[in-house]
Image (tube, rainbow, N blue to C red):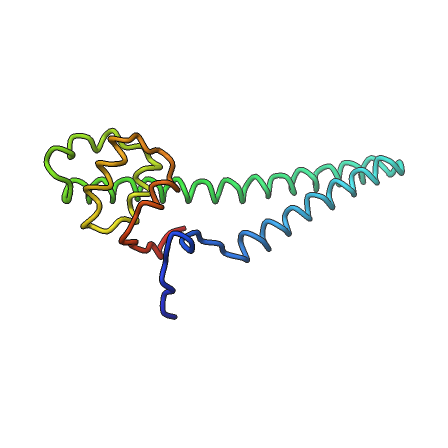
Length: 154
């Protein structure tokens, strides 16, 4: 396995070109082609069989886009639940006793952003997030000084 590239706030987002660009692009192109074929079949008064066939192709093209969207959405939902559980456990271990009861006040986005903070700064950063009601993930991530990379994200 190749060495992992150092991760920072600027480089932590993950793009998989074959998924994000090629896969989505091909499916979108397929949908546009299906729309064109159905339009052409209706416009040029093709047989009902051709029109129905092109309509079914359009539905399949649309279904494929829905499918890829929800597959990604389901994976990210599971990842978010795992992150919430991992960070909550880490917070229970590392927070000062007065902050432990406040873990329940954190929202999912806050858990997701706090996962990048090192152990030494996690308590102070969590206190700041809770006391100042910082909910924006990017704002919290920008406050992290000791960035802990997450190379296993989906």
